[in-house]
Length: 341
Ligand code: PEP
Ligand code: MN
Image (cartoon, rainbow, N blue to C red; front, top):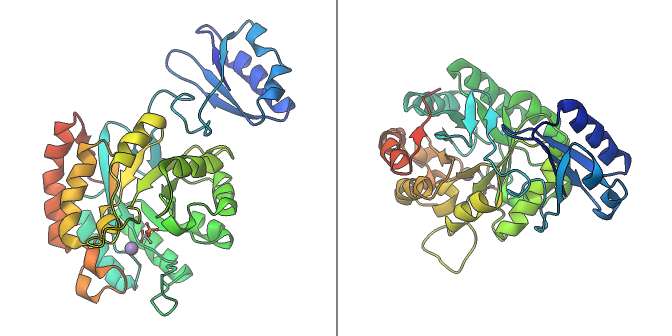
């Protein structure tokens, strides 16, 4: 349910109503807006009936949210949410780019790629420390050492860092080292992990599962936001289809759907979305054209030596060329690129 307060209602009215929502066992949400404040009540909606909030003098109306997802729905929060990851703002008028290798392979290798990512004018740095791979015999990541390299390199370059958290037991360590959590496609419906991230203090980039519908993705985000962490960003990274020419089928219509159905930002990963280096730039342009708030791009200083995802990793000069072309696409959609970090 959403409870829309009258324009003259104050913070004290909101606090009183939020306390009453909580007292019947529902989760309260506070969403102050420019013109008026909206409150949310999450849980069994029959409980709200007991409060007769429609009779409260500070309340203008009580509306039901028809979608199965509530806190992430645009009905609950009509304006776009902006999620801050260190110095990077995702979801506002400016578009951001996060670049980096699939995995942190060593301090030296990561430093080289990260320096190139920064020099190209990116806004954030990515790199996996925990790499659950399709094959148990493939490189599995440096773990805690990888997190330390990621944190140190990000600090040296002044770039916020993002890395995947794979397990519940690693949430605290990732939170201590990174500026945002990434939830991988293979974990999108790991509900215990999502719940733990809802209670954590850093933003979450939630990747779409390879066999997940847009509604499944929205419901996964609901797990995080309903626990209190409103800083969630969706990531379209391709789904499995019958097409064999690409690693996945990048579903850019999901961007349009997510922007319509939810207030949360949406980024696109054309690297995993195609698996083919040559297709990354055109799909990145297309993502911006259809309303994405940012891009996650795999870059490697020497892709042919990469321990994972080399075939889809851009060479540093290709990444720099991509960033040079993006402002025109942003401008065509009435937006602009954020200033480099
Ligand atoms: C990654 O970002 O390197 C990754 C493993 O992505 P996904 O979970 O989308 O496969
Ligand atoms: Mn990868």
